[in-house]
Image 1 (cartoon, one colour):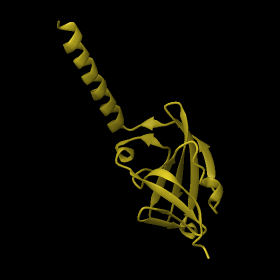
Image 2 (cartoon, one colour):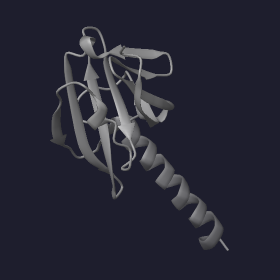
Image 3 (cartoon, one colour):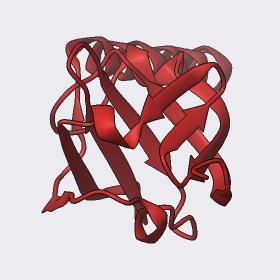
Length: 134
C-alpha cells in the first residue's frame, strides 16, 4: 500500500528557491521532468519526498506573462522544493496533505533583470547597426 500512482504531469523543479516564485537563474537551470504523486510520497527524477516528511506546503497562484501557472512549494526538515506547473496540470487534488494557497506576482532576481537589460541592449544595437548605419 502507498505505492499506487495517483497522478503524473510535467514539471519544472528546483531546490534553490524559497518563498514567492520569481524569475531567476535557478529556474533557468531547473530540473525538467515528470512529477508523480503516489499515496505516500511524491517523486520527481531522483527526488522522493514522503508525505510524512512535508512540514509545510504552499501553492502559489501566479502568471507567467499572461498565462496562469501554479508553483507548489514543499518544505521538509532539511530542504525546500518548488515545482512549477502548466495551467492544465492539477496534482494538488491528489496530494494527501494540507496546503496554503497564496496569490503571488512573479518578481525578478537581479540576475534576471540584468540579463533582460543586456538582451534588450544587444537587440537595440543590432537594429542600429542594420538600419541606421546604411
